[in-house]
Length: 121
Length: 110
Image (cartoon, rainbow over all chains, first blue to last red; front, side, top):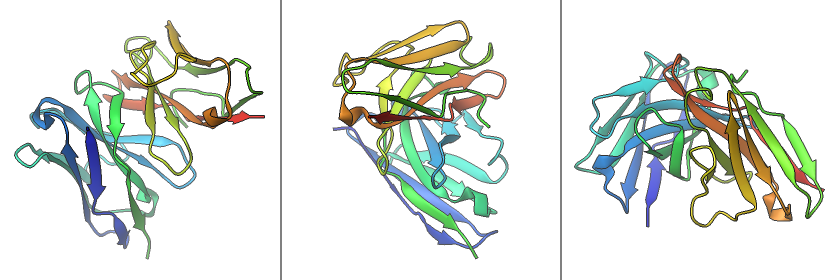
């Protein structure tokens, strides 16, 4: 079955870096765009970034542009989120999701279970 | 504040029909399809409706979606206790070049 498993979350100090991974299985990874979506404690969903099936196109939310980088390794069926210069407001559960209908789409299915990132001194 | 506007809460009794609205603009809902997600607290979101009005396999036909102009709606008929969850609309925005989520609607089954 289609499955996404995130890893790499944890507690980090403001200004430091963290790299999230999302391992995919059960589908042809190299033919789908992938996205990261986050949810701060007690808040709603916020889209973070998306990468096209071949990695050539990437889009970011203004809140993370210039600090976060999305990438993928199609040989390992994995998508990454490199998070630099982390801020307290980046604290959230980070979900990865498969994107249906092209890179510029809000159709996500399925979602991973999420990984918690806590930015605190 | 989200550019896609949803009511923060909605409620109904078992068996009732409830609707949740999602209001946007020409650069998002007006020019792209809308998707809906259901999130039970403590779990990952789940796709409920895609491409405005399509249900994935496994989603009961009690759930339906519609879109008109720059607004969309999610309707739940025959409300059941297990429908108690948070509901989000989402779509691409051509001006922002990114995905927008609505602020979410907390549905309570009384």
